[in-house]
Image (cartoon, rainbow, N blue to C red; front, side, top):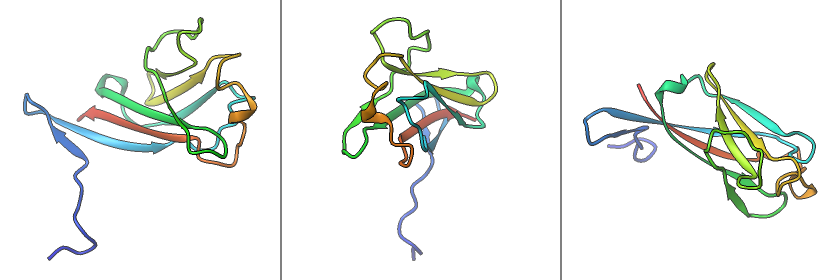
Length: 122
């Protein structure tokens, strides 16, 4: 008998037999028009990261935009938004000044700006 419905595991068994864990984070409030970066405390060491997926939500609409993971400086129009790992278990999301996300379409600080899904090894 299942109480509360089926349980979804928070891990995947990789081809080599190792366990990949999954953790989901809300980005939280972020006025992207005035603030260029947002930090998310993950509690996961960067050397444990396997992959990261993320989406940013536009104000008032159901449009979602993927976050790139080049982990380099945002110096050109190649990426308007990206993840950047830190050495202390924090993941930074940065938007490029003058880019798509530096606008009034992304200035509502009262909504959850999006979601991040992180895959990592124990």
